[in-house]
Structure formats: C-alpha cells, structure tokens
Image (cartoon, rainbow, N blue to C red; front, side):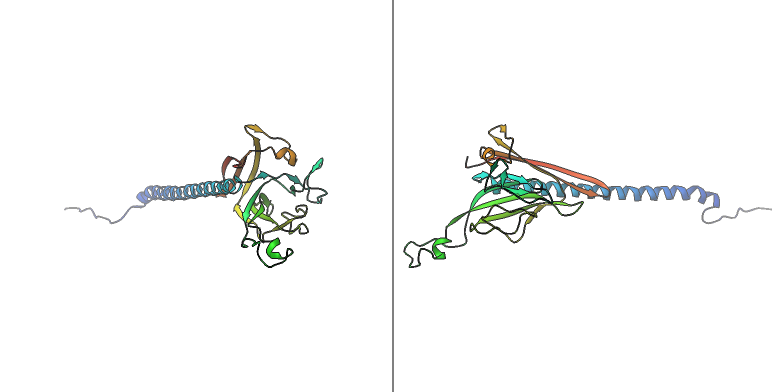
Length: 252
C-alpha cells in the first residue's frame, strides 16, 4: 500500500516563530534608518539656514556701516537704572547711547525724501522749505541684541535720523534715548533670530581699541570686527553657527 505525504500550504508554527522576529527587526531597522535620515536632513537644513542668516546679517552690517563717518560709543544701563549722562561717566558725549547689552552704532548720512532747497524761493527764512529741505541728513544706524523672552534673543536694526534738538523719541531699549535730537523709525527690523552672541571689536589699524564706552577713544577707530553666533535646536540637538566680518571705514 502506497502512503502519500500530504502537502500543507503556508508556514508551520516553528517557521513563524523563527521568521517573525527577523521580519520585525528588519522593519525596525528600516524605520530607524529613515528616522535618522530625516533627522540628519533637518539638522543639515537648520545648519544651512543658520549659516545663511548669519552671513546675511553680517553682510548687511558691513554694507550699511562701512561708509560711516565714525562709530558711536555706547553706555550700558541696568534694568532698574536710568541714564544720568550719555557716554562715559568721565567723558559724557551727546552722540552716545545707553543700552542693555551689546550694540554697534554707525553715524552715517542719508538723502531725505524732500526736494532741494531753492535759494530764490519766496518763502521766508523761517519756512520749513528752507529749514527742513537739506538734501542729506545725519543718520545713526544701530544694531543691538534684544532679549525677547527667557529663551529667545534677536539681532535688530534701528535707524535714527537727526531732526530737532527738542525731540527725544521712543527709546531704543527701555529707558534709553539719545541726549536730545533723534526720532526713531516706527519698528525695529529683525535681521537674525536665536542669537547667543553679538560682539563688535574696534581697531585703529591693526591695534585693538579698549575703552570703547568713551567716545573720544572710539573716535580713533578705523575698523571693526563683528562676531555673530546663532543657535537652533532641532530634535533636541543644538545647532550653532558662528560668523564674523571685519571691515574698514571707507572715510578714514
């Protein structure tokens, strides 16, 4: 009598017990690889964004301030204090600003939106046409790091134009304003986010200048080096990018 072996379709229990863990490990490995690739891509994108942001900010600072007549001194101000003078305590200067934190100020000149003054105009000598129509005006361009909250700091730009000696407009930061002749723009422009360091270093030729809170000392500056560091947090990992630029004042 012939005995035929009955063929069964599918896997036996033992085969399933052997194959299933292998399949699970393969799937988990593939998923982990994909997650790692996505995370690395996100970090790379964050690094590229931080690099572009820093380089853009430094390029703007160089373009806007390289034509400055001079750099202006700053005077740090405590959160609870008020400015008693402008500039260094031993050398108060009207061009100086009290701030919380680090800032960079260049004194430049800009064209007004008004037309030129006409000498033959019938307007009187006290007319606004004669008083306010100067074709160029002094402009102080200020870059400063502002702490928005406990974890976020931005690098901002504010432009102040000289108007009337009786005007002291909205403060650059709380409780700070120039000694009496500025009117600020309506909003500060943010040029970098997540700033952890903004630091200008001034030079006379190749010699670093110390005592830059004193305007008389800072008048000797012919160049500045600006260091900027931003930090992004992606997937629990800190991504930092540091950039710096050094440029000479074109007018010195």
